[in-house]
Image (tube, rainbow, N blue to C red; front, side, top):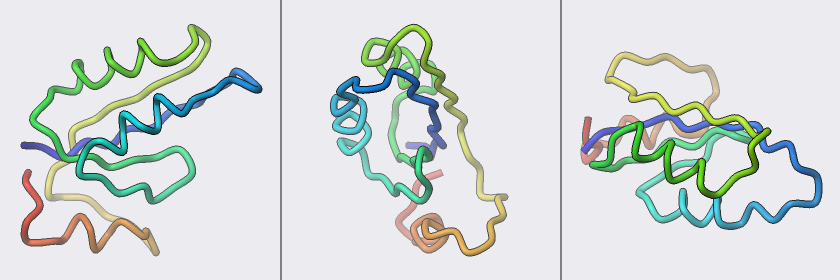
Length: 89
């Protein structure tokens, strides 16, 4: 298992992006900023990206990066989630 940061710019006004949100909610996750999710999964960053690409428009943007235990934040609501002893890295 690994922890990934997933962020996006969804640019199609009026588009139903619920499938994107439902997909991300399917993981152990924390949504700490407007368009930033942290997810824990055994999938690769490419697997996550490819699935999200199938759910968005061609002008939308996705970024997926694997996190490590060396991170920093200020007043980030997911900091406690990241620090949980059960978190898999």
